[in-house]
Length: 211
Image 1 (cartoon, rainbow, N blue to C red):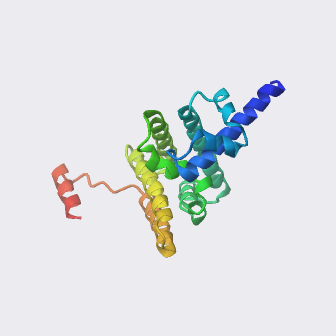
Image 2: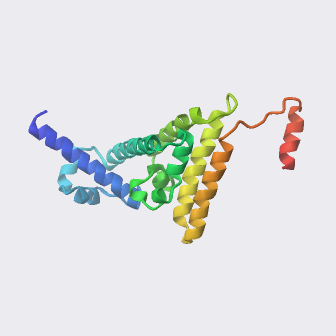
Image 3: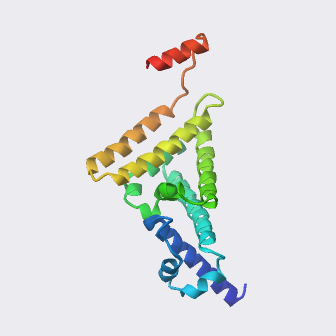
């Protein structure tokens, strides 16, 4: 790789890093090309030698941010002496993660914006949630065929709890949201749900409604 190509790649990476930082801080709708290039220390005119459009930059930045999130979570799990499932829940639902949204989960930072975004961004977000589901499912000791549902519940609960803990202006409530979600996820994912095969389907449904 010659110097010019190496420099171009370095600049490309700087643009993406700046875009990711701004996306997490300001969201999809409020991150423009000029601001990204300024944050990267590059001129606005050089943008189109790297990307065809703002949308192309956002898509690549999302993919890069999600890959970094996964790597960071894996490192946190590897450093912990806890079971992978417990380590993952504790690392994600920690006050440290709550207090550092710029370097935290892009899914939590951008969920609201992505819901209003164009199809490509929503597809990238969708595929990432599937990867989270598939990463967590093998760690859950549950009956065959139920792990995927438990994993989806876990992903939704963790992202939702992180969002709420950041949104409230009551420190005690924020801590309680994280702690309660950690506790319930640990309990729910610890053992398989009991299945009473003696009851008929309509009896099981009636029992659920009565709870």
